[in-house]
Length: 328
Image (cartoon, rainbow, N blue to C red; front, side, top):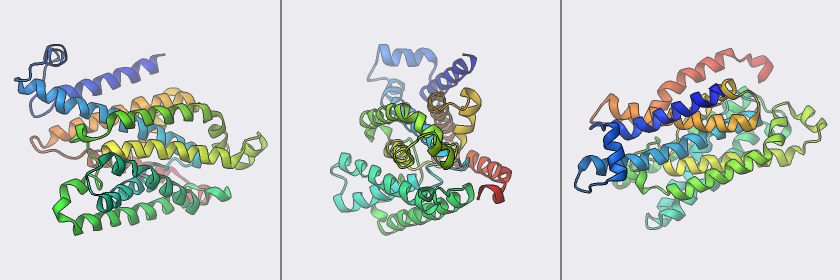
């Protein structure tokens, strides 16, 4: 109970910080009046409602989605280094959207954004297959190397597109490094519904996914249909990652940092872990975004850079604890 209250308090603090802090700070009373007595002539009210509120919604959606995706991916692969960003799933979604933007233009943003999902699905399947997942021989080192190679390839292709289309640099730069800026232009309601649906599906499939973390032999002995459970896990990761990339771009390391914190907070049960991961992931992303807006104000450091600054050392620390001979 105390852990749940703590997670809720942290999320509330992150949400209030997003609304209150920026180039021009807002007092709690200012935030209250912006929602209850909105004055269109007040620049602070307009900033809170038109800019910071969509930013808050995008952070909640993307942070919760990536936190839960990381938890499911680590259960599926039994790999503490598994992360949708590091294993190329986020880069696959971004690459698909960039190519779609080139082919379809920017007229139909809904169609272009929807391309994040097939891109994430293909990348997830490739990373899992290259890491030996479908042979039941997946290991942290093998999967991490396969995902890193795939991620580097896809991000290089995205960067190549950016370099060849300098006239659209600002548009495509979003798909290289994640950001919550201009969140009001993103399909927040639609992607929020996708996250809710994916969470419900993960909740139903949680018992089967949990057995995968015990190893393929034991999971099969418990009567788990391995292929069905693996496909369900990859589907959840695809939906969550695609929704996150659609509203925030590719953000690495968040799905790596959140699951260990969620397990410490909620134990090893996947259903409780999903709820904890959603709260912690959203909190970390919102706090990182707020810090990025303040550290070099009035300029802004993109939230994808901020999470990398924290997640990089975490990745190194986890990797050093792994015994490659036993896990790889």
